[in-house]
Length: 454
Image 1 (tube, rainbow, N blue to C red):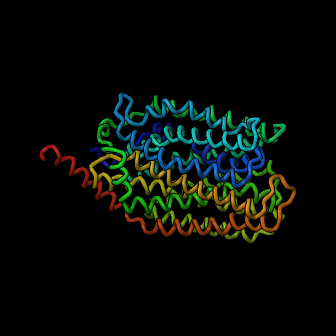
Image 2: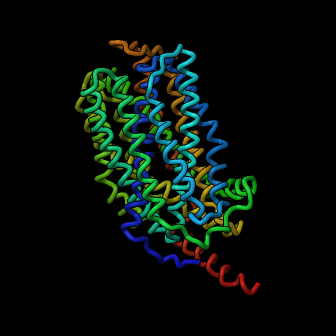
Image 3: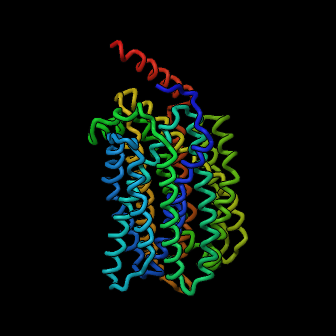
């Protein structure tokens, strides 16, 4: 058993962090901010149908996320347990992402079927790449604070690349003759660029040889070990609820900016850029809070400030733009905390699972976590799509009805505030502190030392 005081070289942290490009730019920024809008206002699907497509894809995740995690836990190869999946899945993932942003010359039903099929295939391949990628983080170090550092490096890249994407989107939309062309250019570019970091990770990072062969005994057994862990569920609820709030905000933000604040579509990336720039600048503060306090209390502080920001959005008058820019900057602390702290809390549960099962279950653990997070996001987008439909939203209208505007405002203020409040309660109940984790590592080390003599 490696010692818990181990440190990861900065070069490895940087290379690993580059793997956040596709999750941040493609899946974390462009898809949630724009895909529902793209489906309704560019591909001309009904909002309810568009939201249903996203929900069906998440139900598929109930199978592929944990399954891929379990397979990678049990994989034995000369490249390790995780890297083969990144090597062979990177190219298909990039190609399928590009196909999501094309508008085929089909009927309404044909377009709906096209986006559903392509989204299911993309989501499956994205899982094949990113679940093993995420599982590398807890394997590179067993030290709880060093794991927080690894996640912080990843989130720096995540936020900076998301910021770059937000700025670039404004230029792309301005330069293209139509939104359809702009989205196609963005999809193809991001899909191709997103392939490269995973190939570098495969070439540069080596896995722990002692973990190979210590994976889960099987899919159902691994699921049992993970799902019976109370700390796992508390960390997962905090993560899922925070990201569901993010999904609601990202999904409805373009509608709020255009129809309530009067900010044109071409300027909406600027608001996104302000949020991400603020979050990037405040990441060191999040790290400082996590060092001075327990991770869960740092999360409660960051998330509480963020919930208040959404309540403030309810009070912004129609057609008044400047408060939106101010609120975008103030939201940075909460967004930064949501990027770092739930993940840093959840991977500390892995040693608790190993104490019980004797197995390293990183893949299936993170696969279940990824599924639950994405399910929460898709349920939020599903509800958002039908809420727009039922409140009378009309795509591409010059102005919306009072009911549609009320629905948009509620979904950008009170709904995220409620979700974030529940996330804070879940985090506050999380039982694994820094001292508890240190004791678990000590117990595991003692077990490994005693094993040969048993």
